[in-house]
Image 1: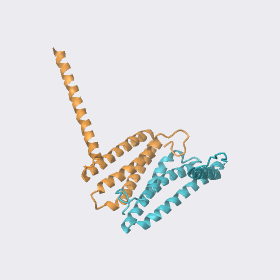
Image 2: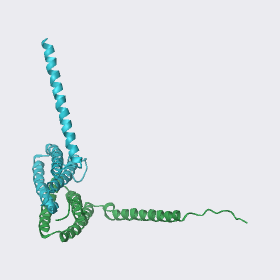
Image 3: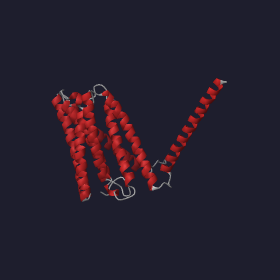
Image 4: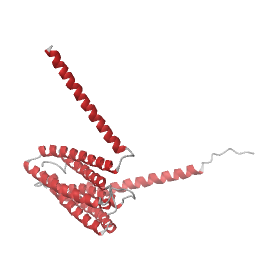
Length: 148
Length: 142
């Protein structure tokens, strides 16, 4: 009395499928939430004032992220390191301002000028944040960072 | 007869040129080989890193020159000012970055590598200004 042989899914396949489903749902959520956030300001801004505010907010957020990294780095380095880091940041601020003066020169009399300055600030702030992050997350044995 | 002599002279010059080119090629090869070799001394590696920096600096200057030719006299002045600020920032940033190796033999390599890195970032910034598409909002009309 043998019944029909039923196919039994191997255990690892079931686990794999479950994880795949979970990953797909998570990815979809992330994409949707990202789009939702973008709609908050970049897509709903109607006037130049709204667009300026939106660009300012982006810069503000980027500066906050840089400040978090900078504060962590400050507590990690020696007293000499701190002094050198403060000098470097001051020079970076001067460079950022000067570079963005040049980049936005053509717009200085236009209504979109604040937005162009914010945009330039954002790009340079992100680049500097990545440099500082590289110092903070320096791996042992890497001669190009750490040990300050 | 006279023409024959002339031909021979040109021919000789051609061979001389080829020989020079070949030697240059070989020296480039051996330089690259030293830089990649496991037997390279720290001094070799320091030289290699400095050569890389000189290359990165040369590439930035090419872009800078093109940009200088493109912008207005007022834009030139602003650009020169921002480049000076950038140099001060680059030096200060690299002094901080390489502070950990300051007393070591790897310091020249670390410093040159930091200079290259920041120079390449600035080259991208200047390239974006140079290749600014019409209607772009963060570069135009300098």
